[in-house]
Image (cartoon, rainbow, N blue to C red; front, side):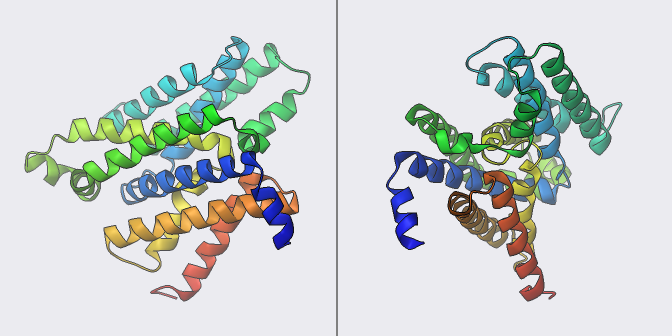
Amino acid sequence: MLAELSLYLSFPFVRYALIVSVLIALCSSLLGVILVLRRFSHLGDGLSHVAFGAMAAASVAGLKNDMAIVLPVTVATAVFLLKNGKRGMIKGDAAIAMLSTAALAFGYLMMNLFPTSGNISGDVCTTLFGSTSILTLKRSDVVLCSALSFAVLLIYILFYEKIFAITFDEDFAKATGVDTARYNLLIAVVIAVVVVLAMNLVGSLLISALLVFPVLSAMRLFASFRNVSVFAALISVFCAVAGILISILASTPVGSTIVACDFVIFLLCTVFGRNG
């Protein structure tokens, strides 16, 4: 097995997949802490469905680079949901559920009305549950993903204290002079970017697991914001690497294998955690 694994690691596409998965997993776990603590755990799932609808529209339009549509639409939706989630006509989870199901339905409808391939079911399944596209990345894909991921990490590090304040008590942070509207906009943008990047790793239906499981696992062991963030990042990176290597050796779906690893770690942390 070690010899086989060593052989696979000698191929550039496997190394590319590992680099991208580590970066996406790291960003997902850090932003997942914010979403879980603010009780917006379903936001990642909702945005992934919106991204699916945008991706379907880009495919129907014949665009070679679907990122030109998917990323702006997902960012705009994230901004809308976070900005109007509390005071809008349709609030919180209801708004997320409405937009996500509508986008999912219209996306699938467009793919059926204007098919771009002979295997619509396969295309839909690939988009929803992830595919082997993570193992066919080009150098340009890795560079783009790396640039976006490093931008997200840099934003998180530079504005850590403000993000911490808004996450725990937005009203108090606003009263102390923090421009909560600006930082909520910043958080919405980086969450949308990570969701779009994660679609190639685990598919749109499994993104919530990537955002939530590492955080919940870390919360079983630690109580402080900093410790939860650090340990969630370690868990997420470990599960991403383990999931990809297992999927290569066992010929299992990449996204599902990564999520399965996250779930196993969650169970272990639950059993041996502070309340276990």
